Structures are given as structure tokens and as C-alpha cells.
Image 1 (cartoon, rainbow, N blue to C red):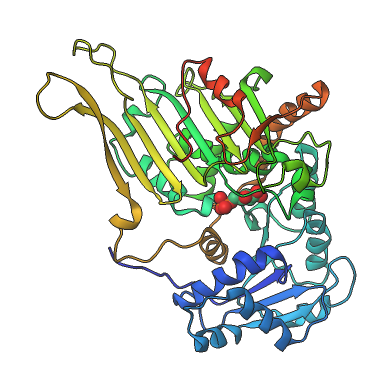
Image 2 (tube, rainbow, N blue to C red):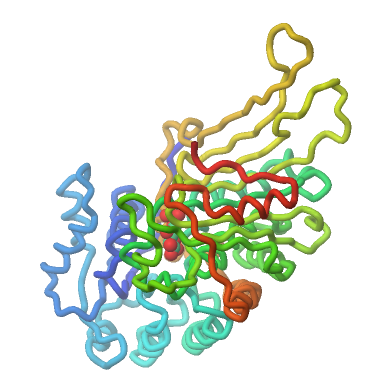
Length: 479
Ligand code: BG6
């Protein structure tokens, strides 16, 4: 396979929150990788913005530190830093905005990346407009969390739309930038094999798992206000569900794709409490508990959630989607597993279908796909059946082509290209909150407490029961 890097036009990327955690972990390294890959036009610039009073040299030193790639050529880092400048700005005051207005150039793609808390979205957008920095062509990128509930999401949308039009607003859900997530669309819409099977007559159920082994230590204060439902389900898992369940769009354009995703969210049934299992990890050995990490000894916030979701439309009625995500689980593992129905009649006497056909799309680690099939157990002994799998690891299949990019790398380049396909539209986000809000409100009303689970386990007992009562089983999370 041939490596293909499509250069983007010259840009001025203004990065608010340029010294923050996300910028250091993801945005600067991502930009550097795209620079090394040759995707930058030589006239492109990144203007780092934050409140701190730093000079150019001190700022570039910080950026160099966040790239921290021992394999990177020092000269390349120096060359990259030549594209980087710094401006100190008071996001909610007047200081620094004139300097920014003078620094951005006409006839260059202009993008504002707000890697800051949502309360700054409105104030920054208003100042970009007031100081004449925002143009009708410029783009504004905002990070998650996009609101805390439907009302706050609506307010954020209004604040952004007061200064920018929807086609200029890029709401990031980094799961959409993951290689395998896009592969899911390729798998479904570039192959004819799966489409006739992709419905409730052929599919028994779907399991979507995003398991993490990390705790919430270090970000407990944020997380305790959020929980797994707001932090992961309303956005990342929702996007995975949408891409799995959506109808084929008529073309691969941002609005055609997002219209179809929106229809899935709008078709979601309310979820009754009996179809939800919430958990919170407890201390184990050296490892502290969720309550230690959140600094809230009485916390009733969930660090784990499993739920059964019904998509009420012709394609999916009768095929539940089980979602599951949590912290401090046995292993980091994200996958979508599509369980096909068993054969309607088994002709081999005494033979059970071991597992049936399951298509597993692995997001991480070890991106790839596995199709579990049933074959004859080789050798004598009659017609015994066993399971065999067709395995495809993308890294092996794509040897020789470019390494998959980090989600942020791709998404930032899409902003420069002006392609919104992998970004959430305002109505999509609002619709996802409209579905999530009553579920969360129900917990508060009923004062429900999450069930405790061990660090390093597969989650709380209730999650197993949720499946057992439907006569099904979760796929295992690690060995
Ligand atoms: C973030 C959540 O959006 O996604 C985190 O806030 C979570 O809690 C992270 O750990 C997971 O992302 P990834 O790419 O590591 O799966």
C-alpha cells in the first residue's frame, strides 16, 4: 500500500490553552508529526496563546519539551519551532487581542483551537469577532466536554453561533479521528458483503465496550462532576453506536453522514433503570479507591456503566445494543462486537454451535478485525464442531504504508482542509444530551448508588446480571 500525505494549504492556527495538558499531550506532538510527514505548507504558523507571560524562547522550549520524541531529529524540531509563535492574551479581558489581530495574515486558512474549559468558549468567540480576527472563512474548534446537560450544551451552541456559523464550528470527539472508527465506515459502506446482514433479522445483538485500566487519579475533581455517563457514553460510545447503526448516507459529505447519525440518536428509546448497571471501583492492594481519587468520600458518581440500548427503527427493532465502559478495569480494550444469529436449525446431531458468528472490530489496542466462525474439529471422531477465527490486524495488513496517525493529528488536518465529517454537529450533541439527561436525572431522583467493583476486574456484578437476564454474556475484558 502506498503512503499518501496530502499537503494542506498554508494556515494560521491559533491555539488557545497552548500550555495546557491536552496541548502538551496531544496537540503539539500531533502537529509535529504532521510537520515531519510533510503535510505543512512552509508558510504555515501556529500561534500559541495563553494567559502566562512567556517570551518566545521560553514558549518554544515548552513546546519542544512536549514533543519529547527521542527518535525525532533535533534539526526537525528546530525547523518545526520556526513555525511557532506565542502571544499572551487575557481570554476574558482586553489584553493581547490587538496583538493577535495584527499577527494573523489575510489569505491564509485561519483556525482557532479552543483547548480551554467550556466557560471560555463564549468570551473568546466574542473577542475574536469584536477585534475583527474572525472572518467568514475562519474555523473554530472546541473540545469536549460540550456541556454538562442539554441546557448547557444549548447555551454553548448559542454563544458560538452568535459569532460563527455552523459550517465554521468543529466540535471534537476524538473517537471519530481513530483509524478503526473510520474503518467501520469503510467496512460497512465500501463492501457489499456485510450490508445484507446488517439488520435485526441477522444480528442478535451488538456489544460496544470501551474498557480502561487507568484510574481517575489526577483528574478526580472534574470526573466526579461528570461520571462515565457524561464523560464517555454521551459522546464516545454514542458515536460508536451511531456509526454501527446508521443507514448508509447517500454520499460521504459532512452533512449527509451527520444527518444519518442524528437519526440514530433520535431513534434511541429511553433506558429503564432495570437496563442499567452502574459501578464504582473500590480500593485494592496499593491502588486507592474511586472515592480516594475523586477526593469525595461520599461520592455516588459512577466510574463504570453498562446499559442496554434499543434503537427503535425498522433496521434495529429487536436487536439490543449493549454499551459498557469503565475505569480501573482489567485491561485497556475497546471494541465493537456484532453477534450474528445462530443458524435456525442445527443439522449436526449433538453439536452445539460454540459461539456462533461474531464480528469483532477492535479499536485499541491492536487495531483490527476478527470474524469468529464455526468449523469442523479436524480429525476423526465424527462431526464435532469447533471455533476458528479469521483474524486481521490492520498493522500487519497495511505493512509498508504510513503508520496510523493519532486521532488528533487527523482531526486538526481536517479542520485546515475544512472537512467537518468527523466532527459533531450542534444538533447531534444536543440530541445526545436529550437522551442522556433523563437517565442521569433518574439516578438523582432515586438517590441510587453505584455498586462497588474491584480494581482490575471486569466491572460490577450487576453488569453480568444485565446480560444474564437476557440469556447473553459479555465478551471477556482481557484474560
Ligand atoms: C476522554 C475522557 O474523552 O477520553 C477520558 O475524558 C478517557 O476519561 C479518554 O480516558 C479515553 O480516550 P482514549 O483515546 O485513550 O481511548
